Amino acid sequence: MKVKLVAHTSGVEALVATSMLTTTSGSLPSAIHGRLMGSPEEVAEVVGRLEVQHGNVLEHNRLVWVIDATSDEVLEAMLDTKFLHLTRLGDDKWLMSGNLRAVVEYAQSKDSAFTRELTDSVRDVAPTVYRSVRRGRT
Amino acid sequence: MKAKLLAYTPLSSLTGCRGELTLRELLPHMGYTFAVEKISRACSHQLVRHRLASFSQQSQRYITARRFSERFVTPPSVEAAGEPVFLELVEKASEAYQRLVDRGVPKEDARFVLPNAAETSLLMTMDGRSLFHFFGLRCCNRAQWEMRALADAMLGEARAAEPEVFDDAGPYCYQLGYCPEGRFTCGRMQEAVEKYRA
Image (cartoon, rainbow over all chains, first blue to last red):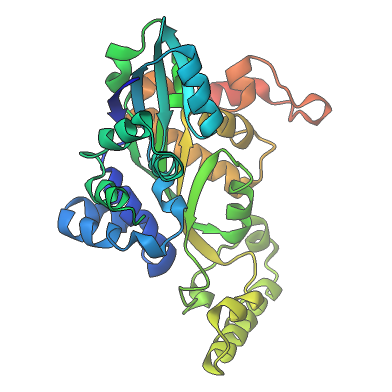
């Protein structure tokens, strides 16, 4: 299976941090988000505390991949997790989407070439979460 | 009340890889994250019934409802009635909450005295297909006033960001060309269609 991330919500980790602070700070989410978009250091610091939070803070984003895979491989992925949405583009080519929580939980539940590729695909858009997953923390 | 679209997956980012897929087929792959602010808890209870969505709401366990009596939502019908009992109850609930917190009752328990009028803010994320369904139900004249105002505000944000995607969104009568509400129809379909015509 080949996995290529082709689109994503902008500022994925800023949204994760906004979600975390919205539930606990009392500030308005748009104000939190506006502040965080200009402060990558604060985003990394907040997201670095993720282990004590509910996983649902990872859901405020959408990641879209094009994958090369056989029907059997896609069926296996769909049986493994119900939180990835797949549409056939052509022979052995699929559009797949989901959120960061789906990626993290899939990677935690199964170690395979596909989940490793999926995890690697979010390295640039969610670097703090990526490092946590690689360390096996989140 | 305020709704702001914070982030989304732009249609343009999928242009090169969508193949023969139509916009409708792409919608489940597109995500939209809104800041929804200063709505009542009565409204947020309706919002979370849309299960194909993600929510992060201000927690009454962690956030003290200080000045609750300054942070609540009054329905227009209550204002129009000119009946003071609503404000009296809000003041009493606010005093009771503060007294319980001052006596050492945890916030998670003191909040039991707060009414549905309590103001709240949250982050909400939906995929495009679910958002169309949300607009279909909640922009409808039969939706409750606060929910409808919120849905209209969100639709305005979505159309401003992605007109090509959301010009066809609105109440179901606008989307479908007929009213699916049956005997509950408001009977004002043409008026609604005019309102939402982009």
